[in-house]
Amino acid sequence: MNLYSLTLHELQTKLRKREISSQELTEAVFQRISATEDRVHAFITLCHDTALREAKRADERLGREKESVPLLGIPIALKDIFLTREVLTTCGSKILGNFIPPYDAATVKKLKGAGAVIVGKTNLDEFAMGSSTENSAFFVTRNPWSLERVPGGSSGGSAAAVAADQCVAALGTDTGGSIRQPAACCGIVGLKPTYGRVSRFGIIAYASSLDQVGPMTKDVMDSALMLEAIAGHDPSDSTSINAPVPPFSRYLDGDVKGLRVGIPKEYFIPGMQPEVEQAVKEGLRTLERNGIETEEISLPHTEYAVAGYYLVATAEASSNLARYDGMKYGLRVPGTDLGGTYMKTREQGFGPEVKRRIMLGTYALSAGYYDAYYLKAQKVRALIKKDFEDAFKTCDAIITPTSPTTAFKIGEKTQDPLQMYLSDIFTISVNLAGLPGLSVPCGFDSDGLPIGMQIIGKHLDEATILRIAYAYEQATDWHKRKPSL
Amino acid sequence: MKISREEVQRVAALARLSFTPEEEELLTRQLDKILQYVEKLNQLDTEKVEPLAHVIDIVNGFRNDQVIHEPAVDALLSNAPAKENNFFKVPKIIE
Image (cartoon, rainbow over all chains, first blue to last red; front, side):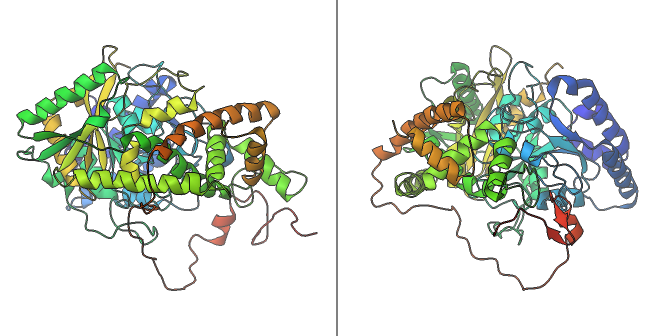
């Protein structure tokens, strides 16, 4: 077995026993990147030299420290939306094409404090706006399972890098499904924690009431370990929740007897890929054999989620992205006067999808349309949140497919923005309600493409969805399959 | 049509964006299609529903009003497209 293909928890044990060094492991990961990156294109920036220095430091600490430092010596990749001190951070946009942050995001600081080795910055849809990573201003990332297909998005680079063993684990962000959908497309585990569970300080904002940071990993245990490392209250993020962080990994014992899981009938819709439906239903039977009780439930406002989301998210985006004016950082394209400079900078700096969303959001917030669009969407958001509150009166978790289809072909949906938006149909409600959601591999279609099962939890109850996902993983071996690259 | 070419021009000006005539035409069609789709929200009676701006109760995070020098001025200015001494240099605003 190659070092780069092992999981975080396996490597943690080997590092602590001093069977391997972080330098060996980091070298192995970079060799793997050299061997595969010309086909996958997961990274915008690689941090080879600093990573090896961090690995050397980790090895020194491993020799010294008896107590466990959770991620000590583990190579981790970051979506290029996390501010990294002195490392280029583009957010997939030309407008930040030369941006070198003067500080680290709170989560990056935590990872570094926990001993992680930062491998590099992964590709994404520009400003996290997209479901395929095709909206990156720089290049298209390929799905390691099938190179002519998308890895999903917007955290497509992180998902592809984990699936291709180019890092041990990665971080992504999820505003409408951007961790879970690419995780499903690439056959890995992706967790969007409860809104407020993880600090957003130092992640580049898209839609602030929905954005959340989360781990993208090779298995469920790794997901729990990563969440432990990044979760917790941060006074620098006013929306960060001040609640204790449970030792998630210690709850993973495979015992899920008596837990009640709701299956929302609205998530099995005409037009979805039949193999996805079959794989998820088969997954539910596996869980039932392990003692889970399932019941059909209803989340009646599901069909309104995409419409509500695209008004709320774009309204927030139009306001968040007003800061890119060419004055303090990023691109500046001089015009004849101040107004002209703003216009030219934004015209040349933003790509078409970002402009489209700024336009939609500006329209929804503009005088005469605010009540009809933005306020209406916020009211529908309240109804969607209430659907979940009602459902959770009788069940401990909810299970659905993560995405209606497996990974689609590059170029297939780029001409039709609405079709692209609909690939997030099963993940968006979770963001609107602020709940935790996790995607775990649950099978493959006839083209050999991975399928994901989504497990949705109660507010702040990541523990239960991790437990269910872990029990499922113990009973199956989908997560052990690797793409042939 | 939910949105006209003129409205697209008006919104573009508000958003400090500019488009070529071809882009404007494409964008009008695309936004129209999206707005027709979101029209489905009107099937719902939300007369008595309180709008939800945020899923958690946010309390203001007060802190002491203290001067801190991290990140340093140089670091914060390091990405400025133009600067002079300790200032961002911007185009002339007032005639």
